[in-house]
Length: 218
Ligand code: DX5
Ligand code: ZN
Image 1 (tube, rainbow, N blue to C red):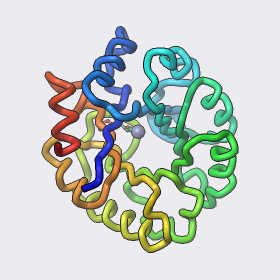
Image 2 (tube, protein in one colour):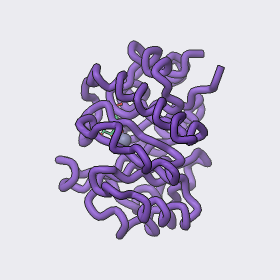
Image 3 (spheres, protein in one colour):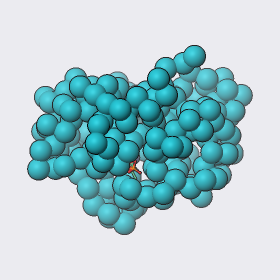
Image 4 (cartoon, rainbow, N blue to C red):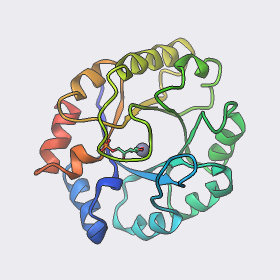
């Protein structure tokens, strides 16, 4: 059985003590740290920038999985690398033809991520997966933590899994983000996910360790 990875999203952390919260989830078994970048254009919210990524870089050695929910992310790819990102994920909504942006991320030596929103048909990814190391399926409309998982997303996760396998990209990571919780995690894993993002489910839980174990399913 494959090992499922868990990426707590610091959007739901307590920003008064962000470093402590990151150490807490690392000690609790987190595999990556998911960092949501929002620009108030692509999504109706503002969050963090490279400065915050840089300031938490020395807190942990965990992989920084940076999710770019922003217009024109190409302007910032290098800055996020220099700040300490390990992976950068851009949206298919911004790059209908994502090859160039993915090449730039790869040239920076980072994990190349591509994401799609709930209303973007999975089939649009067909023929566009060769450069994708991490495919992120959004299960809520991006912008806020704590939203409810859109049930139809399970079908989309399965479709994404099938497409990765069909297009010879089975080794790429299938990441699921938005509304993931300890109740729906088993179905999400069964649909073919490799990597689960948990904001509220991890930072809002009484025990991050217990939440991570339940999300991982072992
Ligand atoms: C939503 C972000 C998510 C969010 C997840 O726009 O991309 O990563 O932090 O939060 P939860 O797990 O609470 O839905
Ligand atoms: Zn995210």
